[in-house]
Length: 316
Image 1 (tube, rainbow, N blue to C red):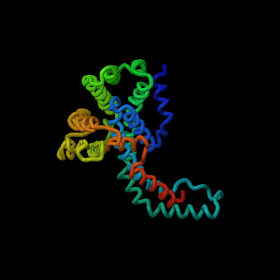
Image 2: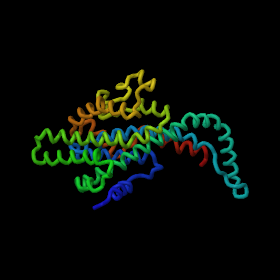
Image 3: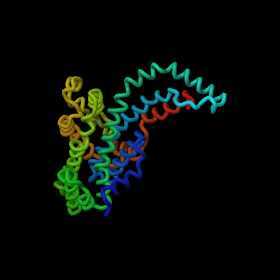
Image 4: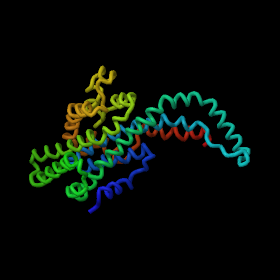
């Protein structure tokens, strides 16, 4: 029987490296989307996780766009004895370009460094941690059933992760005997909510607690999920908390109590609506299929366009 670490390594081998922020996020999001698409009646947490991870991906793609101007600053020229005339000219161009752009790029860096190098890094780490914490369990359950979870959970996870999968498993077995068993459907939903609660209250606080005040505010403004491309299906923390609380910091999505209140009152009801109406070909199915195929967003495509342009300008 594979260990937890073996399951995690199996998934890790199919992910880009930790340094490839956007590509790795896209691959993690695709795992979540595929699990839901394969068993939408069972793996409801992974459906919600796909949309949440996709939102993190938008922030990481924005970070790549904002980070690109750093490529303009010339670095590390070889010694004069080793350079050809062409290289000397190139280095001179690079030095002039660096001088001309030093002030605006430095100002850009000063404004974005805190968000890019600290808060977004924490957001990315949290996304990785959730996948490491719960992703392996989905792969293990899909291939080996509940016994794989029971054999590999840690002591602190028995009342959350294990309980969640036991409820999901019981509901699945009851439905196999009676497709009309509504209590079984409710058990599956409750089990998935238990996984969500574990993720939100046990895994994420470590990362949210270390965010700057600016990062907390931006995370609250950007906390929304577009399940099917229509305004009525979009739970947004800002509309739940209210403009005054959002601006003043009275409520923050980085606060576990505030976040869980929003999830219970806004996210879960809207998810229940779109999940209950889910069918192949619906708007949510199309969005999840695009995520499963790792289709790039417009923002990540923009980042990909800017990087080679900046590198060409700096003659790297």
